[in-house]
Amino acid sequence: MAGCGGGDQEGSGDAAGGLAQLADEFLRVRHDLAPLLAKLQAELTDYGKVFTGDTVVAAIRHYDGYWRSPRVLGPTDRHSAYRLSQVTTEELAAGTGAAPTFPAGYRDVAPRLQPGLTVHRITFHEPGQSLGIDLDALVSVAGRWRLLPTPWLVLDVDEPGHSH
Image 1 (cartoon, rainbow, N blue to C red):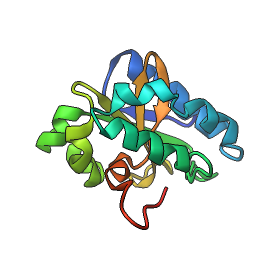
Image 2 (image 1 turned 60 degrees about the vertical axis):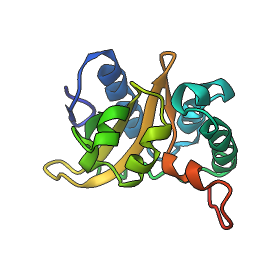
Image 3 (image 1 turned 120 degrees about the horizontal axis):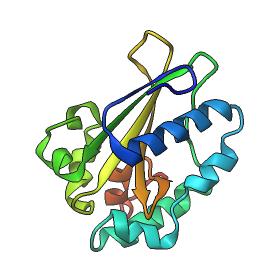
Image 4 (image 1 turned 30 degrees about the horizontal axis):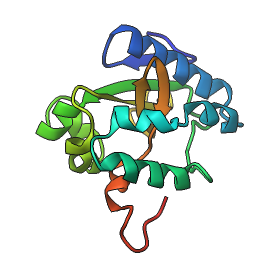
């Protein structure tokens, strides 16, 4: 699928199409991400659709602090292409599928994510390059994209020095 400058997809269906549209939007607004990020912030009821059990409360506490001053690296002027990838909760737990390409912390938090959840990533890169800036964890909740970066940090929310 071609995005602004071209996008490569791993995955299919409506979620991937919607994610390509989101990637294109990031490329269009790259110099002012705040309004787009505000749309991606999870609502209170979304956390229970992503996390399980007591982890829901930890997620609410963590992301409440995180969204006060979000640190999201978006695409630079040199990043005109992107690649989409996805992994399920089950693949993260087993280390299969695209799981090895996601940060190791995902495997730690996988048992605390809802079964059947798919985590998406956009990698913005220069044309012809494979490395770039990763934007993850994007999840579709009730048909809306939500950004929950570094979800494994919710596991440490009660630790001294926890950072958002």
